Structure formats: structure tokens, C-alpha cells
Image (cartoon, rainbow, N blue to C red; front, side, top):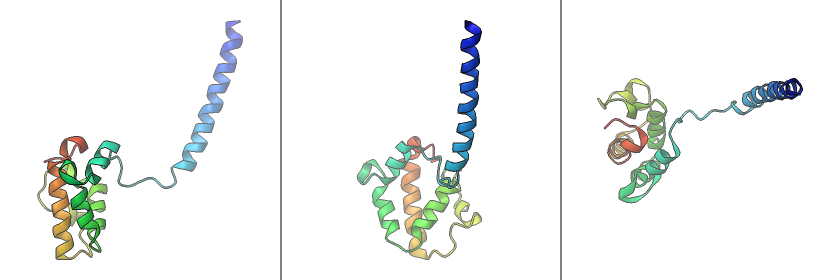
Length: 124
């Protein structure tokens, strides 16, 4: 009896594994380059008021290239390194951004490193 239960289980396991590999390759076609931010981190970065950095993000978003600087910095994991002011520059995040946009991006970074640092595992 035991042998007959084991055979179908291993067959089902093999089918599920094969199916999982096939489905996994279909769903991984467009991975989010700005992850692995956790949902809690994401929520903190977008939360308006003193509980998050949403106000700074909205101010940045209102400027033409500022949001792309912030998203690039997050994608390049600049906030998980000590801030020497060169991560975004050396990784090409500042290209095309003007002085006002870079200032707004720096304000968002300052908030993220202070208000959301613990939740997001950012370096202060």
C-alpha cells in the first residue's frame, strides 16, 4: 500500500515542478528592477506627512526628471550604502536632471535615510 501512495505523489511532484518551471519562466519576463523593496518600505516612502516620505516624493514627482533620479537610486540600491553623494552620479542616475530636480531628489533621499531607514534597511 505504501509503495502505491508514494509513486503517485512523486509523479505529482514532478509534474508540479515542471509546471512551476514553465510558469515561472513566463511570469519572470518583466521583473521589477526597483525591488526588493518590501511592501512596508514602499508604504513608508509613499506615506504623506511625518510618518513617511510621500510629501518629498510628490514634490520630486512634480519635476520632470527628479522621479527618474529617485527610482534609479532605489534600483541601484544607493540608499543601502553610506551616503557620500556619489552613488547616483557614478551609476548614471543624475543624467538629464537639473539643479532643482537633483535638490528635490536629495531631499527625498534625506527623508528616506531618516524616516524610512529602519523599515527599508537603508543606511542613515
